[in-house]
Length: 180
Image (cartoon, rainbow, N blue to C red; front, side):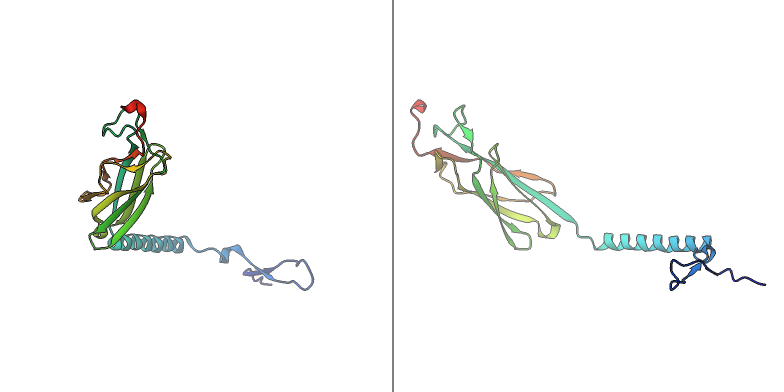
């Protein structure tokens, strides 16, 4: 008597459940088939990598940073009485090579430094920018000094370059007596 080895029946968990069980030898692919499938997957992966590389747009990153300080004695020089302004608001307006206008809002950190950074396609990178102080939330230093409302500059830098803007200076409404 010949036994069919492709399907074996095992005792079921219940009388109604009598599912056949496939023998392992029929579930596995041959070694040659496995190698062919791996080769096809590797070729597909390489093709996708090449395609991604071809269509990838070159990225460009730019950064603008500066400082906001309080000139306590309003003497135009940095002295021991002067301090940085935390929380001062600065606006940076940039025009890209493609003509798009981008407006950024930044606030100074505890060291009085603000930073604006952006990553974009190189064809749309910044062309020219204007950085200007908006407000100081310090209780004494609220008047903008130096009589200027901003700094314009062209941004012709390679990716990763950080452009430093000269410090924005605020002065107190009334100068302390010890400054005289």
